[in-house]
Length: 389
Image 1 (tube, rainbow, N blue to C red):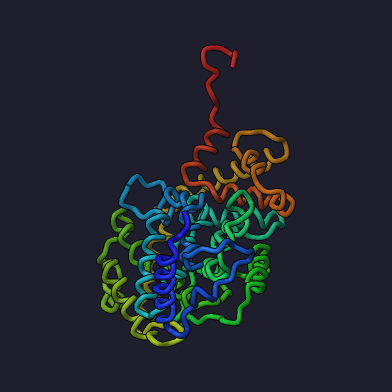
Image 2: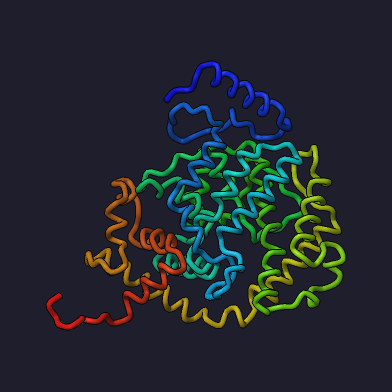
């Protein structure tokens, strides 16, 4: 069905008016660049990218991927899918107050974490060590998110997302905290692709990348704002910490509940960034946030109770990785990697080492799928009532 001409004209007029009302340093949808020609669509490019992302296979796998706490039977603990929604909401709130492009912010936010492995950052470190041992590069989840949308989705064809969305995704890093976030407006799509290739083989640390848009910067800091207080709430539910143990010099500035922390950080960031071409916190709030992040690492992320199963998880990963490598060489069909690999494009097969292919496949697993695959490999199966099968 085609748009009615009058309706189409009205929609385009409204979209144009909205675009023209954005801040002068916002990234307009008219500036969007794709690596391959795309069909004309009335939807603005970044808005269209958000649609492509939420309909992708990798987006659907958020539902059963660890955020911080795994192997916990509690439905109120944050999973990756909820974290992504929180990031998107916080980033769009900041973007609206600063009069930036919310469509671009939403697309980056929704897609930023699809590259996470099963079992979160612990799985990421295991996969990176696996690739390093083979001299096959490194693994970083933000780089893998770029890779999924650019190279792996649609059976190795990619989704042809805009350079600005892909750039915001690969440049996000919630481990980095800075008091000023600026962008590199001179970055070209060609330079972005070079940064991607260099970060895959480990010659460039993705932490050193700077987004090409201020919207990418908004998403970058929103990642921190979304997890810093929420992880505290989850840790309290799981009895890893108690609220009173958070240092008073931090809570007196930021608050000691997630809602208070998010509210303080958003208001302070907007107040110090409005009508500016970079983002920053006030010195007092930044110092408190920096201290809270360090406190979280010491008391939550490195808590011995949280890591008590780490050696078993590492052994599980190693077993599955070894089996996948063996299956690519022998054609066996235990893990499903051959079925997946054979479904990929000829370009992907020709350009991808077997070690990177294994990393691509295993990183795409959900927590449960990895554990079920491990059980399939190591647990003996019943023959039933006889050997006829």
